[in-house]
Length: 226
Image 1 (tube, rainbow, N blue to C red):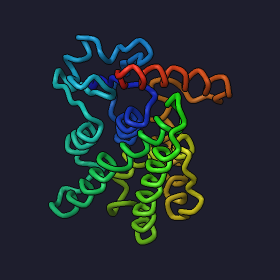
Image 2: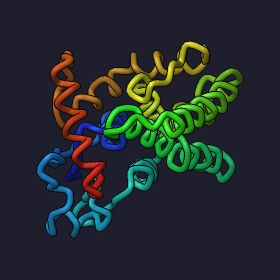
Image 3: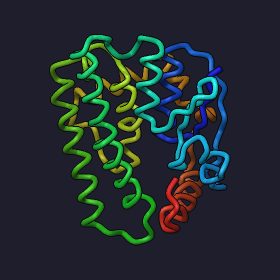
């Protein structure tokens, strides 16, 4: 049985959406980020980097969300082509997310939402780079329905981040093809199920947002990121 150690984060959603798309049975092991459960010896034995998600397949541990997506695709022979060039196209776009979209949106989140001081040049830097990366996605999606041919793990990886663009303070209205793609994946039942793991989606109130920001601020200013 697959075991998914996760929390309600964009990277966590990558694994749960992929598992739902593939129809694989799995058990959810929620990780409480607020108590730094991800930094405990038990979790570090699974993921030495101390972050979610992590996957355990019959005792074999896989960490890093991109590596988990590749493992699941290769395990099932789905969501990534088997031929060399088709596989490479998917991996290229997956690496674009791992090395660009995720880190830049993550930093935009930190300085736009969580940092105790409003460092506007820093906010502008990360929001601007996020917009630039969205422009790259827009260009690709203007020519293709999905990023690398058929729907793949590359789309899952990007969607789990891009769907939260407003939290980074970046609008996607100027990117019509990106918006079309975001909406198309949001309509997929497996994607809808995946973002309820490990907790169901609910209406987020202003008080909820304030509580989340305060918690995140404590983490980012403590030197112990999730």
